[in-house]
Image (cartoon, rainbow, N blue to C red; front, side):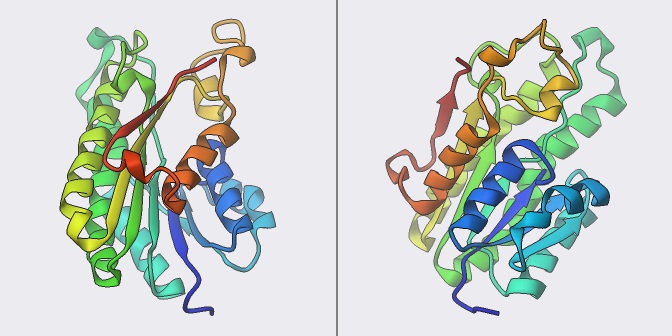
Length: 235
């Protein structure tokens, strides 16, 4: 294994933004650790990424899953240069329909999972004196959220605060952090809630467009926005 090869950990990597980010980074010579809950989907969609892709079946909504993801990255590659917190859970539910169980799960995946992963990669990046964290949020976390995303948008809003904190504390350690907040993106998660009549494909960003911004943050092309939330409104 090339000890100098940069390595990215990407959650929610079996489809959409996570998969598009993995393909971009792998194409630029990165090792990629791809995490998702479904083994079959993960294996099928990432088969073209080659020998420097390592798959981890894990649930970021569980502390043990977060630990497994980072441990697998260190065991396989010996380093972590970038963390892309992309996994999301976005059930459409009115406030009155938001049960305790739904609220707990939404926050576990969209807020606690990213926080746990950051905490686990932090000492690795600090020892390396370099690293980049990119949190995939939503435009509803910084603008008016779509009705039914009371839990989802509020949980995702925490990712912007995490990015600011990481940029501040990481300044002396060479660690950078960003939040990326896209509008509607043409992904399976979007279509689980909205059909083409509700949100036309022409009103959606492509997953590759968001991935390009994520990779630009990682490469250092957007360091002037370190600690900020980068908004990407839908067309």
